[in-house]
Length: 238
Image (cartoon, rainbow, N blue to C red; front, side):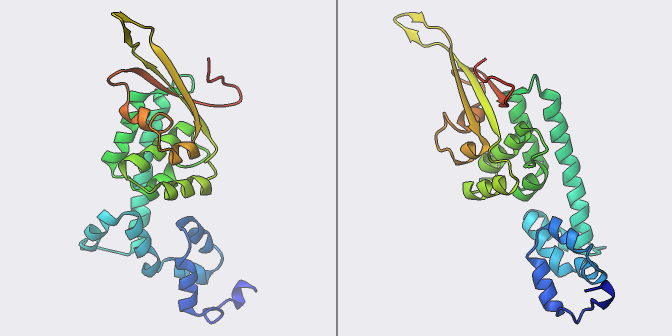
């Protein structure tokens, strides 16, 4: 059907809105490029208000009080740009802390704290940090934040990893523990490591095999924790 032949009567308005309301933001934006009809529908408040409320529920009530309110799509785009700028600052921080494709746990935990201070929601992390083009350590920072800070159900996080095609990306966690005392003598410090996929970390209930070591950081008996990228060129046992 040619665009000139495509009119509002081709699809009832309520049906078109029902179709559009089932789409994600990126798909909705692509749909707006199809024709003038879809572009007009793209600006509808009935589409953007639930998207805004779902992504930023705590901010939703404040927006309702704004005196010069001009539509939900504009507010959504404005807020998304602000969150993207904040995500870029987290990305830059992590990249600056990287040393030979690894990061110390204290810097890693600071990156998670930054997300908390910035008020990231699950959708923000999913759209801005759980992306295949980013370093897997940034994926891990987003994953950890969703599970341990936002308390997002593991099943939802697993689905986000799957949809982003990053669930099989791997990292290696290495940590050194203070040697135990044995009959008045302290034994040699102990070295431990775990090589895990993001899917393993999201589904693990064992602190030693999951995020527990990272969450505790270099405290108590743990002397140092390091997180590294696992690739075909790297040897996690080195």
